[in-house]
Image (cartoon, rainbow, N blue to C red; front, top):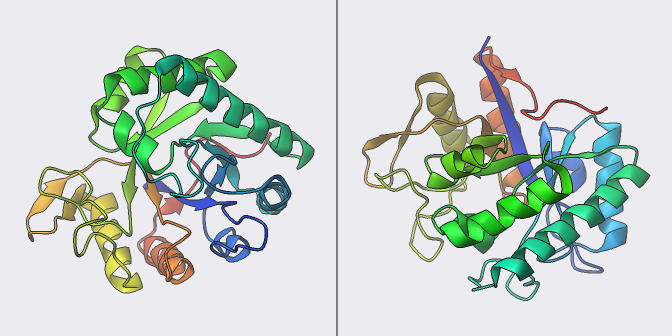
Length: 256
């Protein structure tokens, strides 16, 4: 039976500012990318999300980012390598402490937003992130954009690395994500999203924004938790995949 992981970005609320529906998403996903405080999230809220994830046997990943709460981590930054390495170590360490208090542990790292997109092609920043992960826990798995050079680079540096596709994002014919600044870059129709991902899992292709088919290999599918229809998309995605006899399992294994 084919297996696939569904992940989402959670723990991103901050004080009175509410982002997404973590409780509902945790009923659907198999892995949770939990904010570490740099782009979003506060300690109390992150801890609540971790406790809820632990109660539902959802695997935890550190959603590390540039220090950019105002821009929600989606603004590019030219951070020095040593600073970036320290930033990532700091974030993983903070989440590891909160996760331990919640009765779970951090099993993987998924960079967020601009950092995620930058290290997909920027070797210097990619190596800084890889160095951070290797330094704090070389058993952590790195999640990277499917088709990016980061996957081979991370594996050559001794890290486990898995490829990820995005359910709610449009793709170029080259297999890269359409910029959020472009019209049609973000998808909102749950049925369309689910059918696109079913095709991806079954035959390894996805329809690009120009209507052509592009080949993508992915071990995990992300539904962004901050999308207005995030919960509906995730539920429909899970329903369609299960109906097609797909086995939904976290790529990084279950709780200890």
